[in-house]
Length: 328
Image (cartoon, rainbow, N blue to C red; front, side, top):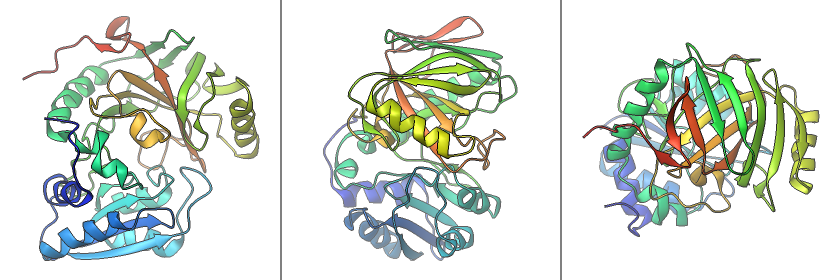
């Protein structure tokens, strides 16, 4: 059953024991920031100690944007660990620190909710093992695809070349082998399009990274893999400033398909982008072991509602409904 109300401690038990498979003696780096509810690292460390592992909690000042690097001591702790879990208010997934830890053999989830409520309710209470079965099937379909087309009732109409790009995030938070990395809550399959090979219009709806709740649709015009125009009130103005001030923040960095039936669409993109029947499209960083070649100081996700997604002209999602066989 998915979507049941639980406690932070119960969710931490599943994450540490079942999804990360923490073993006795393993070094477990728990990275949070000054906005993270203290109960989250406390419960994660408690479970790790019960398993006779070696947890360390690293608290950093919150970063200005998702994708901004943590300070050097935190990055060093990540690379020295066997297992990592990051639950900061801005994502540390698309960072050089994460890539370095992965190359050093660390496994884990480099982005997770920082509010206690998100560990008690919604997407974090779902069955990530069941979601992974669907994710594996979707990733299999995507591996043979050359072109992806995403449309939506709000006006999204984006065509991207993805040939040769490996789907990511299908581990759905379950990382039990060295070098496996994912994010929590589990529930997406994504990849970076080929640089310079996306064209059309993207319309972000409801919520976006670093912008929060959107007052209305935010329309992004895309030409040759770059965001070239923004419309949609104050949120569009803020996004335009980020793009103008941050090198390569205009890069079309990711197309992701949400798979989590318990995910809530609220003011946090970390959970909202995992919602079943949605798509998220990101700007900025696509490198750092994610599969693209653009290194950027930010990675900004925006939600697309009721999407239709075609792989080489074959519809795999229609108005938010998944059309492929997810397997047993």
